[in-house]
Image: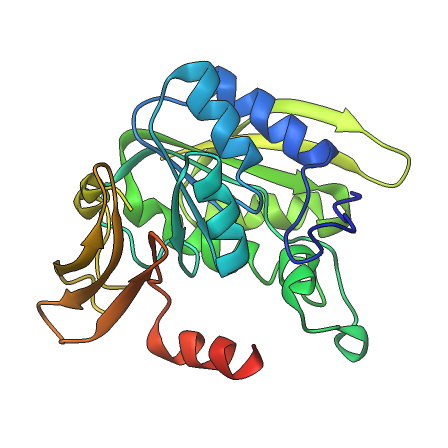
Length: 186
Length: 66
């Protein structure tokens, strides 16, 4: 994961993980789409362009929401799925912050929010998996990017605990991690 | 924000319906305005075309950090 860029240091840049999520989403997405943690809005824009779907991009970071809006995505500043209605989306995509981080070394800026998953790497994935079912319409699908760095089996436990079935739709290995995109369905 | 976004958003605190007050708009989008929860009365700003729907405590943390 190499999402740093000197020109726009406040917003995560599209990287290998973004590309994998975009490929999966272009294949699987349908209906009304939400991308959580949209960052630069690149994945959301690709889904909108290649599938002709309407995509909402949410991010905690207002700089990110603004950049997504510049790409024609409906940008919203939000904490995960909190401000979205029950059953509002047919597809929800998320490339979460997943790097395990020593709390002593957290750097507390926007890039840290974009990358750090707390001590386990799962600090953001846990509440997301617990809450996303509420905003998912019947027949809907969640596309979640999971890194081996985050503890693949532990994430699967969270997914099953929240009552989702899962299926691997994309997988790729890199020198320091393997990335998977899982499709979760209720 | 496009007005159609109203179909999918709600108050992040109690999931109440939001009421839209428009201060400035162009042909396609609402640029400045306020969203008010019809249940709890909490307000959320729309600035530069983007609604900020963070819960008020998170919004204040970030304003303090900025």
